[in-house]
Length: 199
Image 1 (cartoon, rainbow, N blue to C red):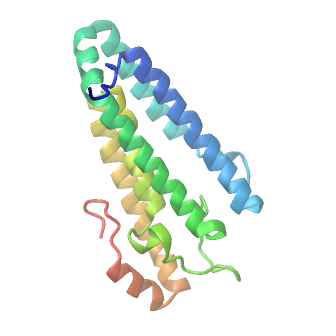
Image 2 (cartoon, one colour; image 1 turned 180 degrees about the vertical axis):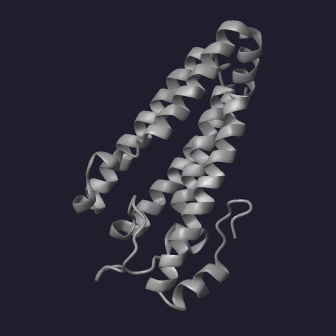
């Protein structure tokens, strides 16, 4: 007989959500320590005030629906928990793969000047995805809300995260074109971001 996955419950979904948060932020710090120790600091955890507000709002939505719409929430979690977990794992893997591929060239702060050791990374994940770290984070953060069955937060996270990355990628690529004249344009022409609406 085929191995059946146990039915997910809201308490399980929330514990896994917290585990995903802990793993994501601790691993960001650890990989910064590994590849960019000079950049290491509190910000290496990638926790900001807007981010805390967003995750807190998502937790409130989850709690309110568990308390007032318990049947609805149980059904949502039972249906969407495992697809959300898969989405989170894939997004996390893609982001961390990008960090391993870029090594010291991967930073949490947009670089405005080319460092002596700075080379354009076009191998590994970067061969198939432009800004794989951003795409991985985008996929991961949406996956957290799918796993929780949070429809409102999923829509809000999609809109806010897309707008954030659109602005950040446009700004970062202006610097990259200055740092790698011709080379970055050629790379950008042949490599997609895979984020809808961001060429």
